[in-house]
Image (cartoon, rainbow, N blue to C red; front, side, top):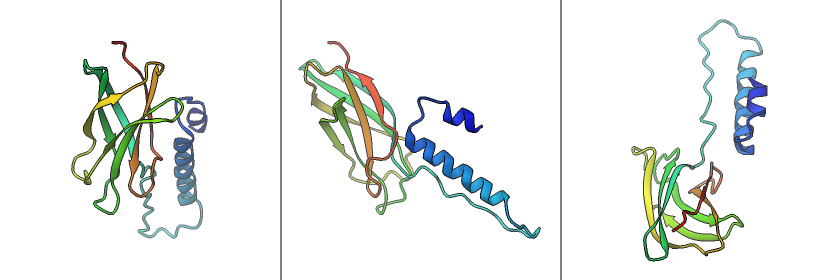
Amino acid sequence: MISSLMGTSAMTDSRLRKAGLILLALLAAGCGGRDGGNETTRLEPADMCADVIEAVVTPDGSGTYRFDVTVSSQDTGWDKYADAWEVRDSSGNVLGVRVLTHPHVDEQPFTRSLSQVMIPTRVRELVVAARDSVDGFCGEELTLAVPLT
């Protein structure tokens, strides 16, 4: 199992760290003196970040683009929720930001749109990333090509 986790090139460093923490917690739970009682080991969710799980970019006919972005996050309410996503070029320059004005506790995953995003003609690849109100930009990002118009 460890070799399959380590050998997956698509897995990010954060996913590897989280997988390692889960493995460590499982190993710790299995070691040590259990007395045969009703002790329960509970693992907290390892991924508390907002992840971009899908993004569609569409030319809107006026030289700008529309983005439909689906985010999955561990929203718990106003204290912790996905509060924005942004479109960046491959150098990290922010081209557009969609502010999310409320938690989506009971709507997971959720999709929101952003129109009128200007993309310089030299840009061929985009990165879409979501932000968590507590942990910031720490989740899975999605890379996509700029569609030809």
